Image 1 (cartoon, one colour):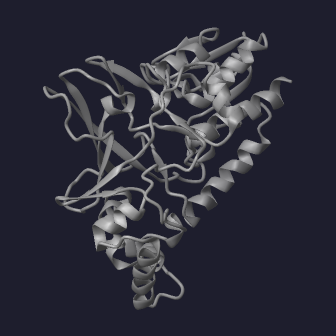
Image 2 (cartoon, rainbow, N blue to C red):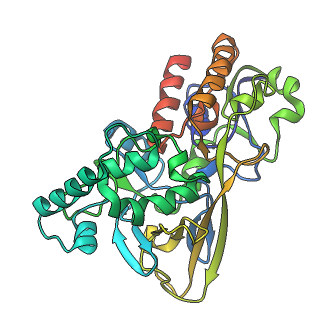
Length: 365
């Protein structure tokens, strides 16, 4: 009945569906949620585009990808400059001269480098065995204790000395007064939200929402010549080798009768006592006005089967399990796995688009 069945109406599936329908292929896109867009889904609330599944700031240095995504929306010039809050103290992120000046009163890059080098030397860590030692060996004790430890404990649900060092192989440290979080050449937020982009991508495909692939797996597999699967790879193979692990998130969104709650789109709460990791104030992504605002508190939670997996736990145990599933996937001539869940990898949006385009070119040209 169809050339391609695409499981999941997120960014990967939408890009592939757009490219396939553009080349005359008949595509069916099924999505278990009640909306398209996956985790980039945005919904208008009080005239504000709310990022329902956490902040999504588009950034890339790939001109081709930037030009591609701009075919579907006009982007504003938003620059991601998050603020870290530790108690009543505020610091700029990523770690830069503004951060170091607030911490230590230093003025020049030389002074900041000397301060960090002194603390790293005092720590005396030669071969970091865990995340705590890795962080201290990179940025010293002060930055670790105020801006890394509490946030990381909340994010991953365990003490930093129980986390592997590779989670933060490096920490972004800049010796300039630059609060731009990303180094990428192109950056912004689509005017009107991400959902409009996905709508345009899927306009020539058949889309069925609230449709669970696994409720009629065999029937769906027989409906198309090929399948693009963007769900969890372990679920597809019925957890044959065990469950892959994730960290999940819970979002708590409020409409407030004030025009400006925190003065910034993203504020990270880096102390351990505050149960959420950050507050997003959505109107600031699009320089919004008006007498109301919408905020979202983001709570990391332990993942259990059936929950949405946001951050894969790419430790050696899970990588070993994933590689077994990948062998099965590679041997399947009909089903192609893609996206963060299909590949068990955290992927930025521009990477997702690039991978979907590469697959489309391989499949369709």
